Length: 315
Image (cartoon, rainbow, N blue to C red):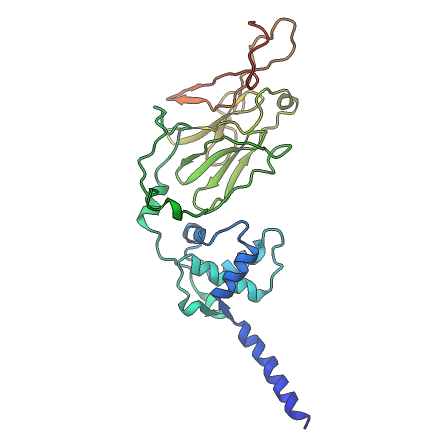
């Protein structure tokens, strides 16, 4: 009489690992919505897989997902949930998961090879926005026609970049215009006007440069992320120019974010140098929020006083 329940229990226990060996796209979707949708959307997965995962294994992707997601508590889900999540990411990235399920051994062994992104998407990535105003003529216009009146309502957020942690306090207002050159986005971020380079497809942070200005920043009349940056290509040397709140003109290597030693003093030009103080004043309320203008091999930097203020004296 006691043997029958024992046999049934043994059978159920042995079935559990077998069930767990199948990854489900639908279960992964539920997990993604609950745990990952704060930072990601399914539509970005195609670009992410095409950018960095072609030819790699499903097991590698599983390990990456497990070690990085959810962002606040990576590794906190079960292996079954992570395999489901991996299956969902693959399916969202245009890797065929037939019937919506795949065995774990098959998932681990598969070689990631998503169907190619559409020609329109690839064409869009190659069209630069290399000037603050769009071009040197300040047309502020691009002839791209992928987004139009018929599809604008269907747009979804592909990725977002949080700048709240940049600077001594979160910036409440930003009017910065990013640049996009060769698949990279260059932008300013935070009150201290950090410079970041991002992968245009995935939003991955490629490099960060942070000005360390101390009291010069504290005394600056024009803090904040500013209006943007300038890009210049001199025979293959790609350079990002920025003007800091403390009024330094800085040249950064567009590939690494490092200051260019061949420009100024180690990449810096002090724009305060040589400026006069007003009569009876020891402060200098001059700075600027706009990026410099680069024309051929000449960099032009502007100047401004405190926001909305006129100078205290004509001298």
